[in-house]
Length: 280
Image 1 (cartoon, helix red, strand yellow):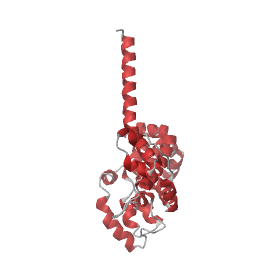
Image 2: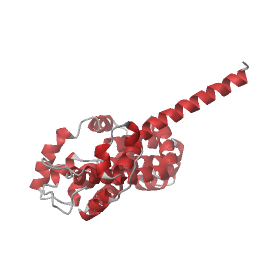
Image 3: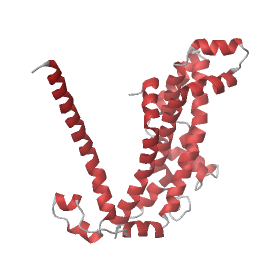
Image 4: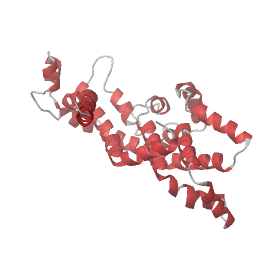
């Protein structure tokens, strides 16, 4: 076999392996789609893998039940909280990251180490004290209570700091010689040159808020509140005496479609962000 033929066979093998790996990851998603649209009686009577993956009937009862139970409002609350977290979190994270890059002292290194350690610390260890603080401040059971704890994201700060370090120092010195202060350099130099990292950090903030379950469950104490998030609303389908699995499947499908669409449109930017921030 020639070297060219060997490379072709190797390429075909890697392609087949990649397609097989993708199929393995797609099977659970396909199962979720089937479960969301199939008749609930059929879901209970499936006896084989083929019956599980190929529906024999089609039903929208799960989606109708979700709409009737106000799930769209819960999705709207989650979307509002996620967008607010992205906007506020990018402001906080980018300013913090610029501070760590522009002011390089021993204290800044210590503070950055604290920031890095913060996203390694499980949120569950902080949730109970945070609930007490928010209750004392009268901020529980509201949209601000969902957004504020998510603004300081250590991973987003780390991602942006690594991107800011890649900005040529000569450009910053040239703007300094022209009389530009920190705010002007931050706005006109660092942010425009770090757009992929900003998008990547925005996705980190969005997904962390969108997927959060424990904090909304703790801080929104009333299950009938208008500020219940989508993830908490899904859990309400399962009670001690009964459960609505088809509605839960339909709601989970809606929950994953929104970040999937967002990821589809920002995929290239995310790849560029990972190549400039040092995150793999």
